[in-house]
Length: 131
Ligand code: HEM
Image (cartoon, rainbow, N blue to C red):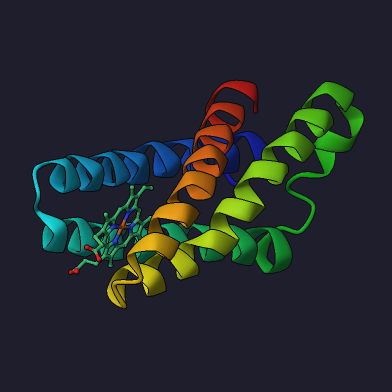
């Protein structure tokens, strides 16, 4: 059934799955497999984008009232706002990560990786444990 709880649960599974990919890409990097790091992260990018677009289609077009129940739960509403403070920056940084990686702009890629890492960890913790 298309309930808010089920949408959130589905997203948690999706976030856990793509985080495994991201972690694998970092293991590849640590082993010097730079190209593999890039290939895994291309998949990571496409899958994450697909999950976000899927969410947007559900909450904007298919079932716009699906998250209305959150308004009646102030704690959950606050946690969602905090979660968005991490998830939106991490989403915005992703195309820049892909571009700078592909173009081998190493310094910029590594600098952005620091911000992206903080945003992704924050998004993961607030999303998986507090929603
Ligand atoms: C979060 C931590 C990350 C770190 C520390 C990291 C680090 C690196 C480093 C050191 C390189 C090699 C750059 C060079 O030698 O010029 C690289 C390449 C690359 N990275 Fe990342 N990266 C991270 C995340 C990402 C993400 C999230 C993406 C995509 C969404 C990405 C996509 C790429 C691509 C496409 C390459 C080029 C691979 C190739 O040459 O075939 N990286 N990364």
